[in-house]
Length: 332
Ligand code: NDP
Image (cartoon, rainbow, N blue to C red; front, top):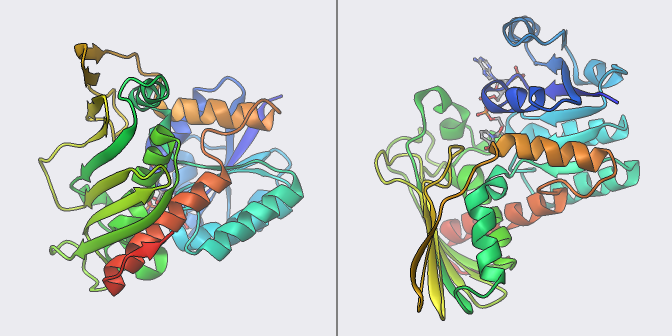
């Protein structure tokens, strides 16, 4: 059966990455898009070859050709739109951060469970071949006991995304809800461990236009295996490059250029056997998200990142914000 997908949100991420990924799946079809601005909705549908534009979420959800929705509106809207989609019996792939509060996230998870629909969170980084290899090597014991990690994810926010992320706290602006959620999800996946506490400092380096919005953050998280992880995120740094390192009692792992959507640099393992490099073939990262979402809808396995994964990364990001705000160590 073809799975018809309705887009809730005429967004950049849908246009640039997710619509192409949906179209790469032989059993997926993008059938409709909702925009809060009917004229923009119509032109977005025309520009992206989407058959229908709906001028309300209710209309999109009433469409019997829509079996699943992809929610990629600004963050404060995810909660109500996911609840409405669950009530209409549609499966849901929701963008991160899943919601603005833990209560909202828990309500969304419960509503989807009750309605018997799949809830997936679009934490795409764990789909990457390098990240998956890193997780596998840690499980195999290649670095002994993991002790410390470092995620460097300070980037320059592209001009076309310099809108609500910088000036609208009500929409979930700021680098923590935008990027730290991804990094925590990636660490949870790689380490197979949960963050338990955080200390952090935020920065206002001149790009965010609202004083309540941070455009840089450095945080240290403790995990339940006692590992400590340093996470640096920013919207303001042009040339740092990105990467992830995990250091253990018997070795170290590192990948550069892994926190974007392109093929990463090789996974580098250093231990008593010397230095090994693992060159990987990358399955396009968003295609894998859609493959696993469709499989889950068809009763095979779970989505790449579930609603619960979205809730846990949100909990860590909210604690990170609270630590920066209060100057205290915060339990997650
Ligand atoms: P956009 O700013 O592109 O879109 C968000 C909303 O803004 C849209 O739903 C749309 O409202 C409105 N909008 C978009 N473009 C215009 C425009 N030209 N004029 C007027 N309104 C416009 O946001 P993103 O695509 O960057 O982010 C959307 C969501 O996806 C967020 O939750 C974000 O965190 C997440 N995201 C996730 C990524 C990932 O890697 N998983 C990467 C990037 C974003 P309407 O629909 O009502 O027309």
